[in-house]
Image 1: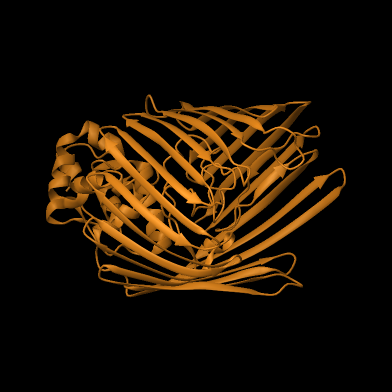
Image 2: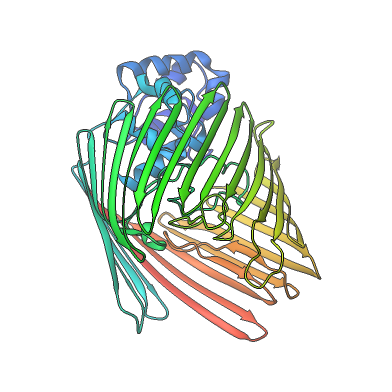
Length: 537
């Protein structure tokens, strides 16, 4: 049989079909090869519809295993976008194997309509009997973290120890189990119900487009320990479209207990929550799907009334959203930010976002947020009023070259950023960026970054930034680090900073070495970090 060549969805290169089939652990590319050219992703669907339909027919006899499929395979299923497929894979890596197809409803953006469309083509294979992972992190100040995970078909367990020189070691973790329609948890967790007015720690405003409808999910273990959380238990069950949960625990403010009932059917959702902590808390939330539009909202009470609502419209190559929110003075968001939580002074706001993909390789996004407080902040005489906006465009004028332009504004500052990314193959990526900001003065920032795969198992990344910003102007940037640590750095004043990150992996072991340095007028600072991870199962 002759060798048929095609585009590899992983590397963008050409490899024999047999190699591709072994990597994908299924024979759908063989069907596409027999029907015509072997392509990947959207090209396979558009240019070879017959082969695509034959592949779907084969999945009805031998469904795709949700616990083994990667994001590229899942994105080919009808109704699943690349973004949603990536969320499925990330949830599987975070919580362990799926036990039934209905578990996909936990994925942000998944609804009953999409689930019904892919149900004939997917299944949940038997998960691995036992998996384990150990992660240790050490910093230059002799502080660090150690985490251990165990997961099997029905149970998951994690233990966390964190401390630094001169401080007491903090211990945490959780143990969860699943049996049939019931799921229980003991340990550290942060409940996530409704749309995020009460039990949430992620701000939905000032974040950009695509963030309006993001119902918070329950976080456990290390993720819950990053902020205020409960130490107690949670019990959740389901019967058809009805889900219920009860939780109880202790935090810094005392004891908290509550219960919630939710109904999901036909793409519509409604949930009722009641809780007792420092005071009574209650919430009514829901979402209604009407064609390409999704309407959502929540009304909550926690010493005062707050409400948030909006609409999301999705069409081919287009997503636009509108979010309105209002917090009464004295409203207490139990676990953090919520939808742009303004604090006890109360406030209201509105945000609008747009994401547009006119064609492949071209991307536009825009975001506007307006907000004001109902009471003055401490030290002020009048309530505060503010706004923020962002406009960004991204395109590929050449095959391996990507260009990004972004303009933003917030308060009395404005910024303009231009960025070029050159990626000739999967082994090398070079990025350069120039940014200009102005407000009471004018400032500049330059960034250069190189990421390279030296040989299989060993990669290196280096970044260097120089900035000159007048007083009052700042630039926020996420820097890369070992898995689980992506610190948000603030650039202000005049100076430069950089880091080198080495990653070595072999036989289930991964080792990160990170060395950073900051140079400014008032002196310099060095940072060193080591992280080791091992897994098996």
